Image 1 (cartoon, rainbow, N blue to C red):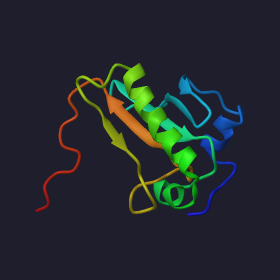
Image 2 (cartoon, rainbow, N blue to C red; image 1 turned 120 degrees about the vertical axis):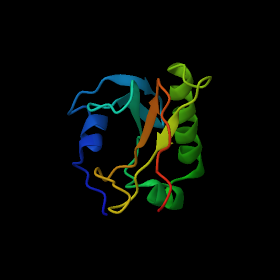
Image 3 (cartoon, one colour; image 1 turned 30 degrees about the vertical axis):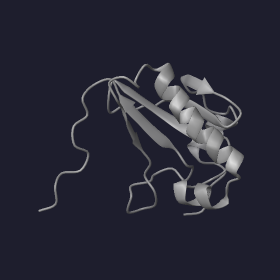
Image 4 (cartoon, helix red, strand yellow; image 1 turned 180 degrees about the vertical axis):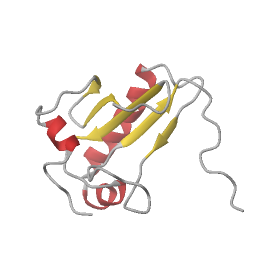
Length: 121
């Protein structure tokens, strides 16, 4: 999957599309998902054009990787999720269910989430 500079998250980063911002620093932007799957459902995206976690960890400078991971943790703490727990999810590629070709991490919380993937038959 190639990076599309006109994907929705790139457009949000450029300010062309509004978002309900939760957090922003030099490395990342976090905002509420428009179709939440849990009481808390926030997307965290890096402020750089990376398609997926695979692309990001292969090509991004260490400072950006560290800043992005720290931002994800800061968002979870800001939302008060660290005590009861939360889930992080990043879909990678077509088989992984990735729909937008810009790295993003879903942060879910606010209730017991249960098993993510049922046991294999």
